[in-house]
View 1 (tube, rainbow, N blue to C red):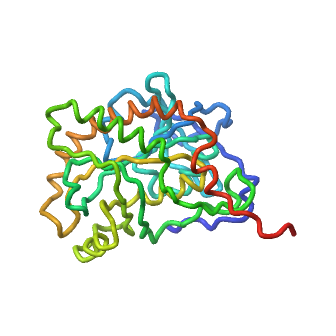
View 2 (cartoon, rainbow, N blue to C red):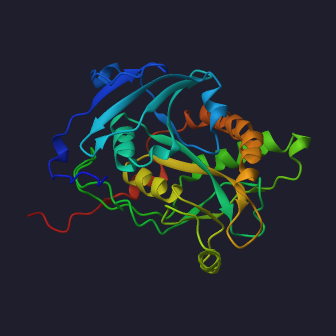
Length: 306
C-alpha cells in the first residue's frame, strides 16, 4: 500500500488520540490530547526487548495518535521506578513518519532505541552489546525528512548528524550496560563495545555477502534495518536519542548462522537488555531538556527576510 500524499498544511494539524486497554480490539475512539498519560521519555525497538518488556508488567495501556502523515502504530504507556515512558514496538514499522510526528507532538524529549543486528566488524561477535555512535544510511524506501511544516518549529528543519546520537544518553547506555553485564559471570564471554557505526540497509531482505563486504570496506560495524531512520528522525523532531545494539548473528558471508539460532539469543539477552533500559530510564528522565547538543543542529538559517 502506498504512503498517502502529504499536503503543505501541516502547521495547523491536530492530533487525535485514543487510549486502549491491552485486551481491547475495538477501533480506538479519539480523546483529547490532554487526556493522554504524559511522558517525556520513549523507548523504541523490537527484537532486542521482545516479550521481556511485554511480560514485565511495566506497560499499563496503549493508544494511537492520528497525525497528518496518517495514524501512528500503537504507542504503549508504561512506568518504571516512578518514571513514565512510551514504548513503540518494532520501531513503528512501517509508519515511521507518523511515529516520530506523534512522539514530537506528545512532548517526548528523550528516546532510547535498540535492535538486534548482524555483526560486520569481526570484533563484534554474536551476543555482544554495541552502543553505536555513528550511522551510514542506505535506506531507500522511507522519506529522508519529516514533512516540512509538520513539526512545532518555525523554519526549515535540516538536521545535522555530527554527532549522530546524543552523547549524554550514549554514555548512560554504556555505563548501564557495563553495570548489568559485567557482574554476571554467566555473561563473561560477552563484550561491550562503547562505539560502533551502524549501517542501515535498504530492508526487505537480508544483505548479500558481497554487500556486507562493501559495507565493511566503508566502515560499517553492524547492520540492521531501522536504526538509521530513527537516528535521523529523532534529531529532526528535536528528540535526544541513542541506542543499544545486540549482535544476534554474523552478517552474511562472515559466519554460519540459521533462523533456529536466533530464538536462543533473544531468550537469553532480551531480559538483559530490559534491565539495561530500566536502569537507563531512571537516569535519562533526569537529564536537562534544554541546552543539549542536538538543539543547535536542526534549524537551517533563513537566507532572506522576504
